[in-house]
Image 1 (cartoon, rainbow, N blue to C red):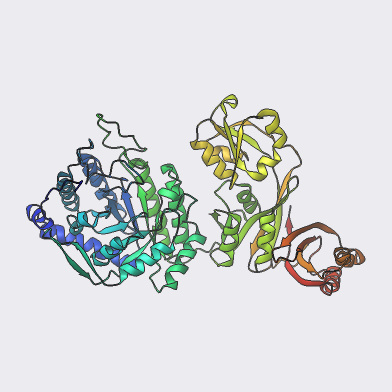
Image 2 (cartoon, helix red, strand yellow):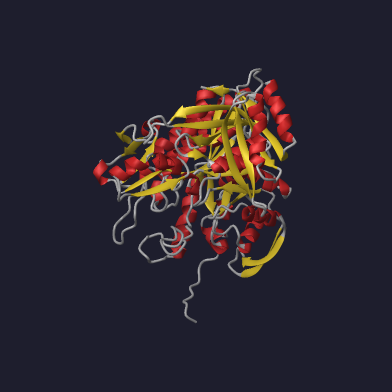
Amino acid sequence: MKCKEEKMMSPESLTATMNVSAEVLASVLRHRQEIRDILDHKDHRLIVIVGPCSIHNVPAALQYANRITSLAQQVSGNIKVVMRCYFEKPRTTLGWKGFLYDPAMDGSNDIASGIRQARKLLLDIVSMDVAIATELLDPSAAVYLEDLISWSSIGARTTESPMHRQMASSLDMPVGFKNSTDGNLQIAVDAICAANSPHSYIGTLHDGSCGVIRSKGNPYCHLVLRGSASGENYYPVCVADAVKKLTGRNLPANIIVDCSHGNSRRAPERQHIALESVLKQKKAGNENLVGVMLESNLLPGKQNLVMGAIPDPGISVTDGCIGWEETEKLILAANDLLQNHNLTAMRSSLPQMAYLGPAGTFTHIAAQKIFHDNVEYLPMAGIAAVFKAVESGTCDYGCVPVSNSSEGVINGTLDLLAATSLKIYAETSIAVQHCLLANVAKEKIRVIYSHAQSLGQCRAYLEANFPDIETIAVASNARAAELAMNTLDSAVIGGESLAEQYHLNILERSIEDDKENSTRFLILSKSENPMLVHSKCSIWFVAIERFGALHDCLAPFKNAGVSLSMIESRPIRNGKSQYRFFIDIDEGLESPRVHSALEELRNLTQELHVLGSFPVYP
């Protein structure tokens, strides 16, 4: 045998030396029941699970818990505050595994001491009447602490583990299963199904022996959306997809959003963006969102562990956290918003507008140009997500770019238009003026981020000023600004509005090659614009195959005296080398000339679809 074995005090014996008083037990049971009531929608408060990424210093943890006590009382009418007390940290490869395994943080790995100290800390915190949350990573260790926990999670790396699903089925507390690290939701949904059911399995008994555990199933398991390396999943369209997956398996559609990890792109200062999105969705009437998680500590940031050095007690040693000052501000602001929401107890009267986000993109500006403050703006991760949000009914409108005067059409938008039943509700254009934004001097820039279209629009400028600098295309200019804000020696090409929003300096203005450059944007909806006068309409068609087919299809418009402003083609992936033609007509469908031309065209096509008749906003 190549390992060394050591006996430990049994859970039963440790519990006897650190007994739970009747008052403490009553507190834990009450907190568990309040969380169950929220999951049953008997209690309409929002669960906020907040605290350090990991506990590494006992006095600091107690100081944090003391602050939580006061804050939880202030917001108790609208928010159920639960403190994160995470003692185990799953490692992708190697690293400090958490307080439970190495409380001295020196590699001594005194696990027996770690368990004793962890249980003592939990007892002290619960004695303050604070609800506690933790991740149960090792089922053998869970037996030592579970009686003091009000809510537990199964992490992204263990959600697929049968052992953890069985453990969750036997726990007498609500359990949240996180989506996997690659963003897979189905694994977590399957885990919830499994944990809801009874199991018989081998595990550690309270007397320390190995035995058979027969669980009854846990009906209070739910989904935790934590994002992934590929992006966030707190957007409305992502939440709607998660609800669909849960209800498809006859599971309660209860969702908690982890505002950290993939949903903050591992930047703690971005956690507020996910929180604000959840609150907007709650305000809009989404009752499936029952809670959020925030990684927070006494002080913001993170620190690296250095052998022989004592870490700062109030700064995270694992994932970066927001500080207490921001934590308190965010939770109090959430309480105010939820207070107003609960007083009205009705769906927001404002329609929802999905746009290619995050905030500050040209798409966002285009949507605001038409709707101003008359809608709630919800950012989406991509153009396809905007379509999906409107198609699913999550949002009333969507705004997407369709073409640029210098770079041409956006093929992805055309392909999505061909596949949707949505209508074009309106169109607008905005002048595109690009700036070079950075927090370093121009000569120190080593990489430039931007959307592919923007890079193309500034090609000559880049060749003249940065011929040897790497340019990286990303999903949006706002995403580029986030990267530039958090990456040394980097810059972004984007609109001036990004500077203030992302705390970047404007190094140069008007760097686009074409000073008359503009981008067209479409507003999408399930129905056409009710305005009586439409100045434009759009169609697509597939011509009957024959020589001169396109010429023949355009003839009806010429004969009717109808002007066309766009003709584009996209291949149809059917193995027949066919094309779909998109046409913009400079009159609305109510025009008799357009109606006559379309009737003639219909006889020349295999398919003819009207994408919409709509006004154009200058």
